[in-house]
Amino acid sequence: MRVLFLGTSAAEALPGIFCNCMHCKRAIEAGGKNLRLRSSVLLNGELLIDLSPDFGCFRVKYGLDVSRLRAVLITHTHQDHLSPQILSYNSLSFTEKALPLKFFMSPYAAQALKQARYERKDFWKHIEVIEVKPYKQYRFDGYYITPVEASHNQPQSLLYLIEHGESRLFYATDTGAVLPRAEEFLAGKRLDIVCLDATSGKNHGKPTRHLGFMDIIEVKERFLKMGCCDEDTLFLATHFTHFTGMLHEEIEQYFKPYGIKPAYDGLAVEK
Image 1 (tube, rainbow, N blue to C red):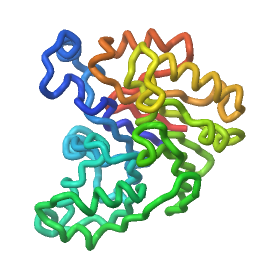
Image 2: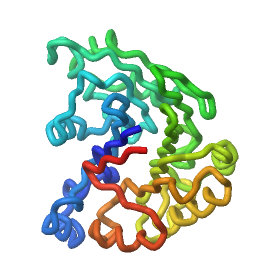
Image 3: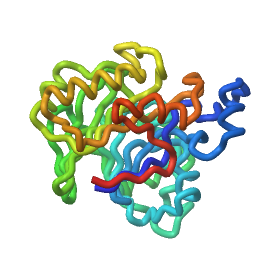
């Protein structure tokens, strides 16, 4: 499984869209990995997690072949993860050939999709919405997709366990504490890649909102004890906010003793 991190920021991007604080200025000055768009990942060039408002930027930045895109998994309805108006442009008013897409999402997200305002609505002819339930497995063209409960914005938010071939990815953003039932579900399932929410920076996060760096370290320790991970499992932190107040290389040094890597826009990993 190849995972491309299209964006790795929290809702406001980094630098913050309307922010001129010292942390945003440092990020601008340093450039490179310190500049972050809203969080989204692309698996094998064909399976997207979250329809970010920056999707158009992703296509230009990475030269994405959008004709390969086949399905979208939605974690929750916050604007940085579901920007439904983008779908207006998957219509024959704006494209030569509309993409047939499957959307996997909670019933709550499906309702938000239906209620959004669109410039064009004929995109509905080209998409299929699959309302999913936590811990039920869904099969799609060689992928096994299992939604997992998140403690963020309950009960509307989801995490995802995605299996393809011999690889397993656990994508866990946005979320606070990993719920006991979620850990029980993951126990005994070997994970190759684990992506965890890092919104709260060096502080502990709020259990019902987000994780912080210390929480990520604790989650890794628990997962190792549970037997779903080992030293070969790739642990990645994502969903960074400018309030963290650290440049990318500083975050790298923070996590280095714990064998955890901070993701950055354009990072591609394969397991």
